[in-house]
Image 1 (cartoon, helix red, strand yellow):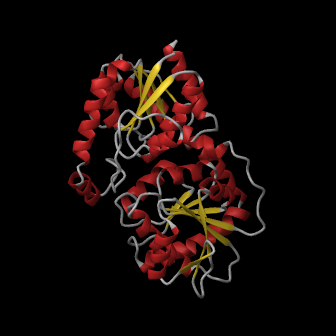
Image 2: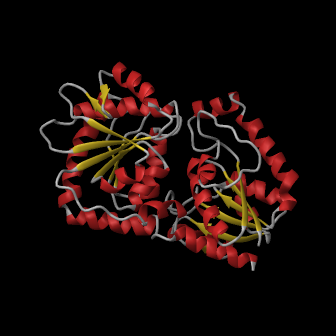
Image 3: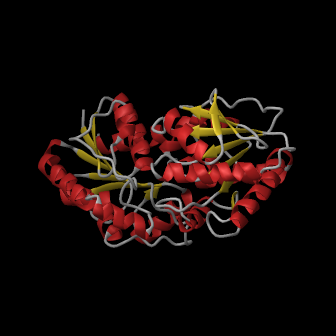
Length: 389
């Protein structure tokens, strides 16, 4: 069978790459991964071997970050790290029959330099942002090269747009990162409304986001009946969470964050999918996790923070990508005005999420149009296998 190398450049990209790698392994192919940024934890959890050691940076990698984030990347040596990863690719490229790109222009350039056959899943780009996708130079020219055997998009709108621009077929088969949440059994509706909190996964931004979310929950009226669940990554352990929450006037007891006069917050570790599935409304400060929430037909309320990733600019771009079922209150990030408006909007959306059939139908339609149906990973893996026949 074929030898395939995954190239990806970010946490969300690594997740999709790992899911694709597992499908390809089940088809009998020999698969390795070279994450261009980050530890590649998703690959390691999936049992996909890495090509060399990896390293984590505080911003999560080169991508959609603030100016401060980009300066941090340079100071931490991410550019030099990326160059070393590219050198490793060039050293071992002839081992592989196919390079599978998951991401954006950076792995596209790397794959082109390898001079090996390439399949590309452009998970980082969408025509939903502007109506017509403007691929960064030299991405479009490279994708027209005959070594790029197939191009897959993240939504149907982008597939149609890029097919015209590149004058070659670009296919939408679904998104592998949706499979894990779409294939899970949907829980029966609860009698008590539930809010899911998604503070993101990258430290130290995670801590900053969590403090904002705690301030937000303090503003929710205690007279409204609802449960609040916090989906938390293991990297923020109980001791760190306890210190952070106490600085904000909260206390952690029996996996519940408590504060006098405020509703409790259930801390859920390793239960991201469960929190998403059970939530009537998702309040988020994340990237891929918010996309998964929209793909599950959940209304989403954003709370922009200070970055480096989930800034007001990132949140605005995310709304263009994911559509009208993603909401955001007015006001400067972190201000009392923004938090108060977010709390009021949260209560209104929580009510609509359970009682407004028009919003429910809109959520279902946007989920299918922007994220696709379950089975994207299997369909894409099958298409890639056909390239190797």
